Length: 274
Image (cartoon, rainbow, N blue to C red; front, side, top):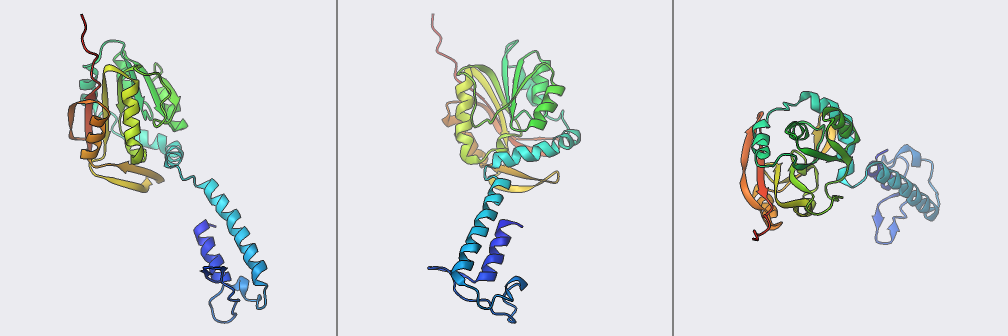
């Protein structure tokens, strides 16, 4: 039984809660106020019943917490583990090739690329791998990582949360974060972008996209519960600038019938020295 539903049943059976704890109002058979389980408890000991009720609720609540972790990222990972193959089969995976081509054209041969939220490895990781770049992808979904390893045999794919990057400073020449940041609670977006800045080499490029309006919450996606979290574009732009990036492009782009807010930004290069 769902914990909230069970809590309502307990209150319905025992009586409402007041400032002193559970109400000592006894069961009142025949009024229709209590469920059948209480009908024969005309003279129950209230203190004993309260203790039993509280203990029962505690155990049920513990089960609820264990089954439905409050960390949205765990829910995202669980859902992608279930829907990864269906999503991959249904999507137009070439719809952003022109954007990726523009990004790749600014990078040198053999550049190290981080694909944060790499999913199935398509399109970003595969595109960059085909360009001859050294690609590392990270994701929280084991199913998506398995698909990425099949789709991009030349890439390196790790189970990692983009909120906690485990790479040296100034390690990558480019970072892509596509259709992924909006699965991270927006209160972490600032920290995520700062970490992108840290692991990029001076002069390195960042390409990311988000939704076109501010919102946060859950919805059904391919039949599973999915978490979405976006700031308004102006706030996302502010976050990227505040991290130290120089903005090269920002704006809404429509691809494959969808509109996303895109940013291409560069970490400032080191000052030139003779």
